Amino acid sequence: GVALRLCTGCSCLRYCSEACQFRHWGEGHHAECAALGSLLGALRTLSPAAKQILGAGFQRPFGPEAGLVRRVFKEARET
Image 1 (cartoon, rainbow, N blue to C red):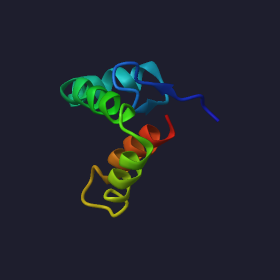
Image 2: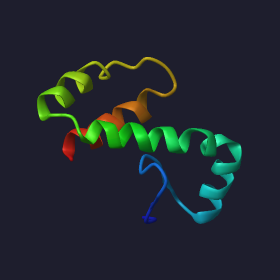
Image 3: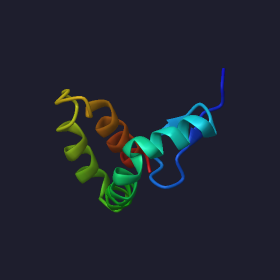
Image 4: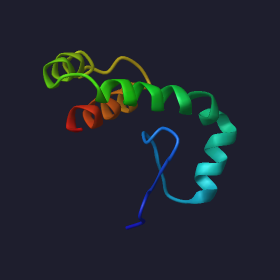
C-alpha cells in the first residue's frame, strides 16, 4: 500500500501524494485547516471523561463531515 501523508497543519487528513494534498489545499482545505488543527488541539486538553462524553455524541452520522469529525474525536481521545 501507499504510505499516506498526514497534513502537518491540522493532523486530521491524510493524502496519497503531495500532488493530491496540493490539489485539495486549492479546493478549500486551506479554509478549514487551521480550524481543524485548533479543534484537535483543544480536544487534546480535555480530561478523558470529557473526551468520552463528547465522542459519544458524534458516533451517529450527521452529514458528509461525519467521518472526519469522528476521526478527529477518536484521535483526541487517544492522546
